[in-house]
Amino acid sequence: MTTKLPPAERAALARAAVDRLGPEVDGVILGWVDNAGVQRVKAVPVDRLAHAAEWGVGAAPCFDAFLVDDAMAPGTGPVGDLRLVPDVSALTALAAQPGWAFAPADRYGQDGVPHPGCQRLFAGRMAAEAARRGLEVRAGIEVEWMLLDGAGAGPAYGMRRLIGLSDYLRELLRALRAQGMAVLQIHPEYAVGQFELSLAPGGPVEAADTALLVRHTVQAVSVRHGLDASFAPAVTAGGVGNGGHLHLSLWRAGHNLGAGGPGRYGLTAEGEAFLAGVLAELPALLALGAPSVASYLRLVPGRWSGPYRCWGRENREAALRLIPGSAPEQANAEVKCFDAAANPYLAIGGVLAAGFAGIDRGLRLPPEVCGDPVDSGYAERLPAELPVATAAFKGSDVLREALGAELHSAVLAVRTAEAERFAGRDPDEVIAATRLRW
Image (cartoon, rainbow, N blue to C red; front, side, top):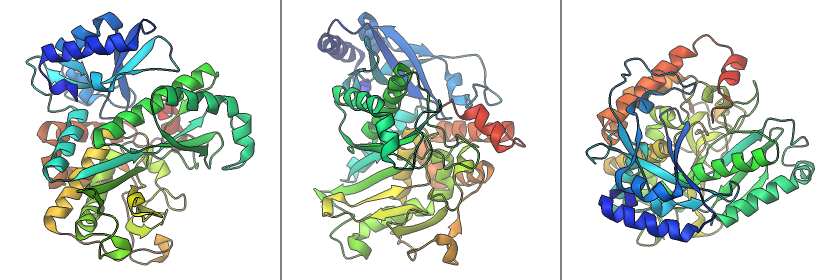
């Protein structure tokens, strides 16, 4: 993350990055994600990137209080300013938007001090905590989206849908490859017009950056084809919605802590403690990973959305799915209850904080749920509405300490305000108000 370097060094790196971009790029998009999970942007001409890297670009702190519909949580004032500082190490020329490049931005105060409410810096702190513990985290977020323009009819996972949109998907693959992104797979998903894309894992901040860039690219390619893509957790009432499943594995000294150990399915004691910590905090983590009123239209039993606070080997109805893999290096865990309304930096950082707390407490996983959790008799249902998840988040000492007082309070204010704003609305009204926000 180049944003932590002295301003003059950042400017020098930006000038070198601009030279590498070449004369085809005219503008640079600086992107960040607010507490409602909405990606916000400002842009500068390419010849102003060095200045932006050195001094930042102004962005009011009120964005910490923005709701999904651009209203603001109560108590937001008009005073103050922050600086968006692009991370030029992640600068990418956009293949589907010729003439443009993208860089994720961190937020700093006017005095150059990191803004305590910056979500990307929070994820960076959790990555640094992993390194302090001698751990490596490899993470990735599945990207699901639906096309809203009547395109993509045909069976779930069906060849008809892939053939009908083969030119669209081919352009998407080409754009991602041109941006240096390693696609693992792409396929039609369950709902009409729904697709899923997975990329190679990376570090915690890199994985969140990748998720943003993938969604940016999907939307750009969709526009070029006269289509509109939605990443919303609920797109049609009663439908399956879009997930944002988080996969991660924990490594020490080159060894995957999810394989080769004495525990169940090869878990090491440290790997199991990490997952047990995540499971313990899942109700509170929903306020980060399933942050919208619309999220709870998706998070219902029978849709493989992970609505139960339990774990299981390859159990797609459990919130925490253990994937041993066919080789030790492939073993990972999937948090299935998260969706694409989440700020990915908050989601990944929160999961890491919960897992580290599990390691510190020496937690162990409860009994596995091997079938449908509803038949187990003991699997706990996760919160079924945002206010319940918000209350769990408010009471989580683990997340309050990890996020810090300002970021924790800002997230809490946004969740509370959104729950109140959408109270009493039926599913169709909630979907109509939110499906084009992500």
